[in-house]
Image (cartoon, rainbow, N blue to C red; front, side, top):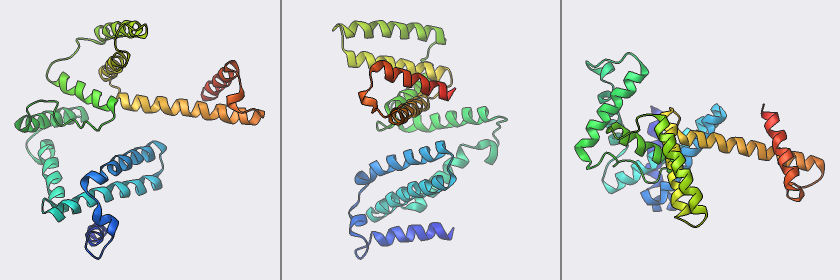
Length: 255
């Protein structure tokens, strides 16, 4: 992979004394937000179905990996070859149905085996099953992963109906907190956590559901802004009833 080797070489050069002052000053900590931002931009490109954009964003994300690897190499900790060797070994270990004597007939079998092997690996090094879930994850995604870990240990709801009953109870507590009886922020958090759990039991990732809801609302509001502009009146000068009418029009356009 000549192009990849060239990328590693370019990054190493940028970090030398006669390279780039900005690149040379960067640390793992200073770059961590860029990793998150680039990952989100990759997801955005995927959701828009834009191959050219996806290619570019994957390159930006790859750059972050190579950048971190070079910083580690400069410290004498590890380098890009160590990273690649580690993931190669992990892929082989977690696919025994391909590289060893294991068996898996369906994608569900593969996922189940992957989680079993992963759990065995984690328990060797961690005091809790919940270790290894990054605190920097979006809150709904982290709730989803916490719930999956708890469920894997057998601590789970018997059925969706009992969970929904518990959610109804959380709604009652939320209503009470609106009247000053309880911590409103805590009750909202409890409801969101319960909703994430309901989504999990229904096979829905709550983070994806939230992104879809955001996209839907954004499209409707953009329609409202455009329609208001075409009418000659800014949206913020319309009454709430008029804005509601535009919202309903936006919903009809979707249908």
